[in-house]
Length: 499
Image (tube, rainbow, N blue to C red; front, side):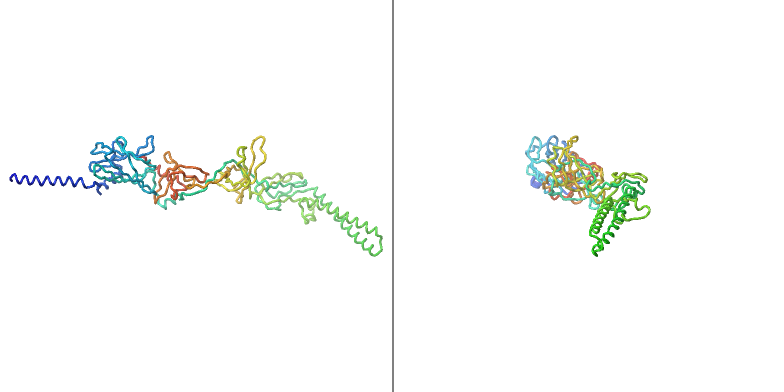
């Protein structure tokens, strides 16, 4: 082969090399399908390469960027270090753009500025650091692209699992937050619906028909006494009835004789006066018996025990709360032998100290809660005391509560929240939805089949609703109840915070 041929071959090879160089320079550097798959497999297996600063290393055609999230003493920020074949590159040579895609949010573009040997994000990278990341870089006319995903604070749970866990979903949105004053109270009998039963005459107990805790109706028999006083009153009543009958007969006879001109007028007038006196005496004797609660039928009841048998009956519908008698016991006329309370309503009585008196008004809305019952009920202030106790230096107020099933039992301690005012806030969640995760207060947002923590800044609360000042967009579905189940799942999964 002569020198001319060698020169021709060398020229062709040289041209090929030059063309290949320019083609390589002009073609944008992209991550191949094979490279994406390799990266994905490395991520799944936890084998993603780490850079010298402990961040994620993204290589391509000899050029590399190390992505870190730095948060030591500063709000979280991206710090990205560029390398060329393992050697640091001047950050000024690199144009960088990062886009973040979070669940339930619009894509977020992150811009950077040079600082020392790295590029620093100009935005705070909000928690949680759970997102899809798209990285685009340009250096010396070459373009590079990477994509990866990282997650934290996520729990996958489909609808069936969510229902089985007892998790109820609500939507974050406007709510009325009540400003409240919390007072301690106690459930007491409604003293307007309490009856103290006294026999109103002395006697000996021969029958006890009701016991403590028994339900009674108005007029129902409680006890039976044998009373000599009653016998005397009934005897007097019978005597006056007899005298009245005689006086009435005499009056009718004298009237007829006077009208027939047989007897004198003064005999007629005397019989009329005697009849009037007999009527007065009879009415007086009858009123004494009626005042004891006896009926007209009972007044005329005969038999060997008819004069002494005295029946004590219930004055109202209710429950026997006190009983102070036994068979054979002698009781006085003013002895309190039964107490009957109507428990269909009760009082929640509160203690109010002087500094809070101006906040308590008649008709004010309140919520009464009893931790022992795990129950609460709405009501209004029905009484505010006008005096302050000398010993307690406090006043009393009360709320009248409906108690149809009798669950609010006198003696229970209760917490009373008085509503001072109401304020509508743009975003609020149920108080039960708030959990702690790491050092945050969080709500678990719902996105498809995923729950993800949302660190939130909280505002006012009334125990039922909590204002969300920042961290949760209105309209976001969230776990309103049993959210502790999700927190427990994160704990079992050993959720980490590595960047």
